[in-house]
Image (cartoon, rainbow, N blue to C red; front, top):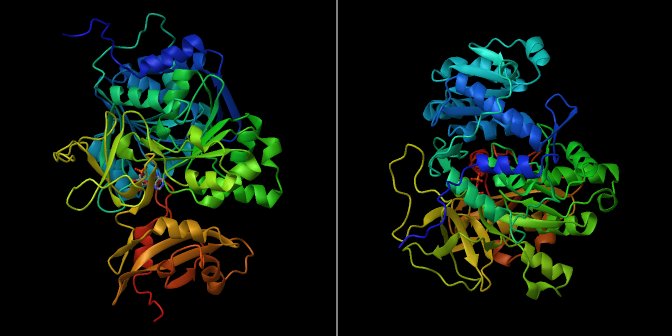
Length: 547
Ligand code: AMP
């Protein structure tokens, strides 16, 4: 027997409609590409998104059309989110830091029809436009004056604001209703090996994921929150937070391309941000700005939670946020294939009386599964491993916002129980807290046992004078592989190999001690701000470990 409740589709347009109706005056603040602050609110964003949708329809955009963006976090990019998806077209958010070869591959693979880009990317488009045969129209996201001054040499090109000039508001326009399983956004994985792979989200998966990330035991969004999206709109839909902000009526702060420590600090302070989300490298840059200028974040800011994901958060980052900012560093884990949220590290009531140091021990774990995500760890034969905090295995996931197959890929990705292999290795403890041991590609296999590059890196960045650290495996005649520690010094620091090894002594198992420590000016990063281990392995492939 079926239930008899109304069968309304879960559509992304309903989130914007709710924000407009119940939180019309709540602000969306952008530090624009040009620099000045722009302010609008949910009512104005809703109105412009509807006008944009009408203009896009005139351009031939319809259900299932592919519309691409190559853009940073601005209100214009957000308008495109709601207008494109609201029509049932698919928004393909492109990471501008991909190589030109990967950009060419994904635009053609997705068969993008219209491409919107931030004006500073015009030279890139000028260079690549002939390799984008499916794109019939290009638009620059900028004021019309800036577009006319820049006058890029791009075929079939116009300024974004011209779309509004020709399209007055139409009070009779309503968002179309369609199957909630329709595709909404397309994101490609950063593809450190081989071509990037497309992950195609649906309205249903997005709205369900959004309900869960908004819970206070999860990332948490609410009408009294002000959310700074440092995580880009092209990195897994900014982890779903723009939708959460619309659903709950939160204020949104968008930094545009300005991700340096000063810009982020100023936005946190001036806009009274309560929740911010970004990868660890962003928070490192923020710390450097605070140190260089002797700032007092505890007095200046009201940042309650900072979400960190994408890479493991080192202990010193958790400690520093707590001590100097009065901020809870909220560790989360997920991936493009998971929309992205899988686990999040909130404390349980039984942790209330822990000392700060004991709390940090828990916060270093990636966290517990949110409702909707099932997790298991398995050995190489697919056998489930115990949740005792000791046994490690391949981390597998299942749920309504987790990938079934890649875009245009035929292969079923799931095991016989319907679980997807994340490529990560983890332990799960009795309380359900997941701790990532490593990417299976990055773990160091020494003498039949594993050394976690994540744990070694976390320990090394605690060493005075060390700004960043990466650990890679090098081949070893006796042990199969041994760790090489690659460090970047803080400006002016005097630290050397002996000092780093002395610092690590007692903090890690003796046999984990890196066989060598080298210093470099900077570490290569991937398009999503993670340390590019593949590149480091190439650079150091001939490095000889001391006997
Ligand atoms: P992406 O699809 O680019 O978001 O990358 C997902 C991958 O980033 C995961 O499979 C993990 O290897 C890594 N990752 C994400 N969050 C964390 C975290 N909190 N700690 C360690 N690694 C993480």
